[in-house]
Amino acid sequence: MDLGLAGKRALVTGSTKGIGRAVVETLLREGASVALCARSADDVEAAVAELSAANDGTVVGGAVDAGDTGSLTAWIASSIEQLGGIDAYVHNTSAKPQRKLDGWINNFNIDLMALVAGVEAATDDLAEGGGGSVITIGTTASAEHFATGSGSYSALKAAATNWTLGQAQVLGAKGIRCNVVSPGPILIEGGDWDSIRQNMAPFFEATQQAHPGGQMGSAQDVANVVAFLAGDVASHVNGANVTVDGGFLKRINY
Image 1 (cartoon, helix red, strand yellow):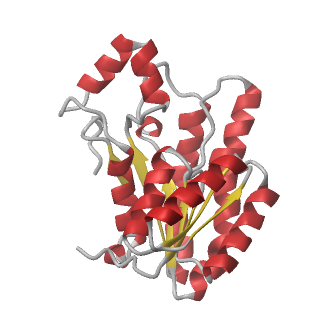
Image 2 (cartoon, rainbow, N blue to C red):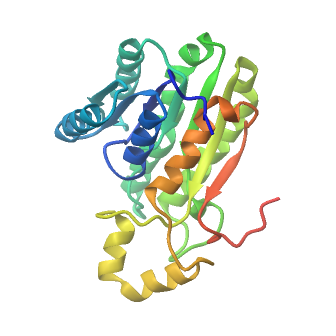
Image 3 (tube, rainbow, N blue to C red):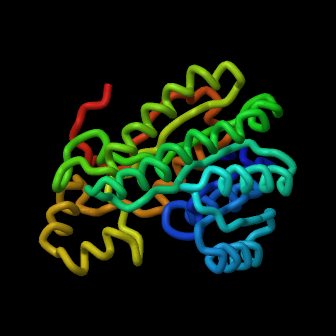
């Protein structure tokens, strides 16, 4: 199936590793040009070099502190200029879960306010071409209790999901579709669940077996859904929260 991404231009935050990196790679394979960012300038430089060598599409990048609105919006403006426009904005930045107040504030800035500021900065350019796509990476942890209960991560992801789906009505009038992709536990080498597998084996095994298929998902599983939502093939999908968890979430989602 042609997803309708050839010639599209996408900005993906938090995208040198993990799910963000898989999203960038998938969009490039489908013919899009992509701007990526991360906090580390070295990681950004390495990712741009690797992806440019492996793909025909344009790849640009910048070092961004997503919790700093000025840094984020400057990267968005620069990326749009370099790519010649924007058709999709993927918000993937997230801070580690915290329970102390300063950690909550960090999650607030990176998970929620970076989303609001980023979409605001990209809206006019998204609308200029007749519309585009905003995709927020959420989590199934915002939909039901998990592990030790709700902390800063799941609570702020829930807020980001609520805000994004509300914008489907507001920005939809400008032709901009707003959707959420909510992964369940995703096993990525060097990622959080890989660390849990090595240090909390019983909890890891119990969580894995809670999946009907007995396996956690991959970053590519999530990236495939993001690419679908970013493409023209999903032109009538707006205001959806798509769960990518292999049946881990037990809630009936009418």
